Image (cartoon, rainbow over all chains, first blue to last red; front, side, top):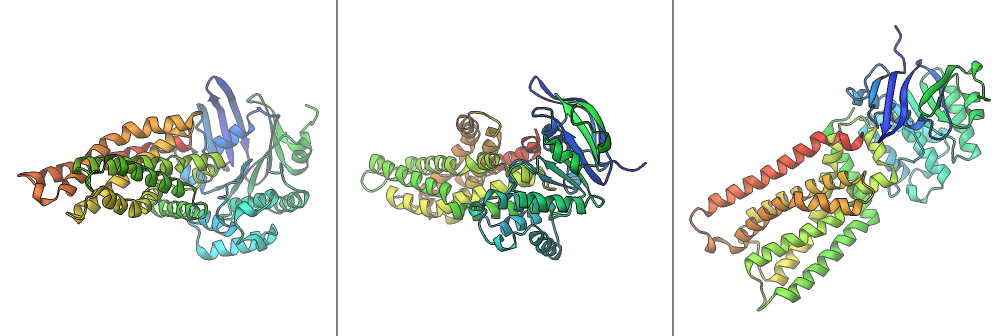
Length: 226
Length: 232
């Protein structure tokens, strides 16, 4: 049986007494772009955090690329790349220093790191900003560097939590094109409450409402009016 | 995948570079230390010196409180900017994040001590050079111990809404036992061989061993539960 990118069975996560995910069972196949839709507070970000090992589930099971995020966290972590609402860069360091720091944490070979930085910074048009401290960069440029950071180790699974919020049109277009190009080469999970973007980008979808899965399937069956 | 130790060193190096560029914590530490030393030197120095017992205690009390300015933001700043999530999702063991922060805290405090200890020696009129090896060992192990406690206290105060209250609540009681030992050892160093009584060598060894045990226990305990701080 083929390994699923993400598979959960009755996954539950609470914050105190509030249940953020209630017995969520879903699966995402490897490759393609999968949408995780829902309004604010639906549980999208919580699910992304459980997938990325940042939160422990309080019930049920989850496997990510065939690994248990709690018991085999390092195996999961080296296979995922994350872009979230916050930019995970150090303001005092330059863009290049940030990328090099993360490359050390991921144990990247120097030659591989240099070729990845060369290709990705060229692709996202930030090469000329590499030696500039991040604190001097605009919000859009910071986001571009953050996207490059998440891609430098060439993750098998890309987790994007509201990736287009705060992005200018140019960056959105570049990122959109990149995601389309890699559609069949890696698995991408995108959370968004912008259903128009989601429907246009994704191959499959899952809709959450108040921590419960209300619909899932191929994007051709997605009904935006629900 | 990188080893835990090299990840810890990369995190420490990143923090040191960051600190030297923004200089905020180190400036606060120097400022507090200097004001405390001057205030104490006016208050307790008479005839050009203070009693060894008082001087040894003051030295470590100043280092202890100076450490608060450096240790408290160790994890809080990463938590506030969100960069802690980058460390938490990197394929490195959780203990390496903690160890990296301890290394950073040690270097940060060490830089302050390089200036602070000679100034205190001069103003308080006592010498720690009577036994340089023991003095160096005591300051190095003591600073590492405070950095280990301070880093864990900073991590524990992250989820709290009143971070500035929680940090001292954890830091003070946990560091106090080590602080007592450091004061005793420093007193022995300052009093020098002239004040050594029979069995003093054994006493030094015993106190130093307890201090080392405190450090090792603190590091081991904190490192082994640190994954709970990164993924609650």
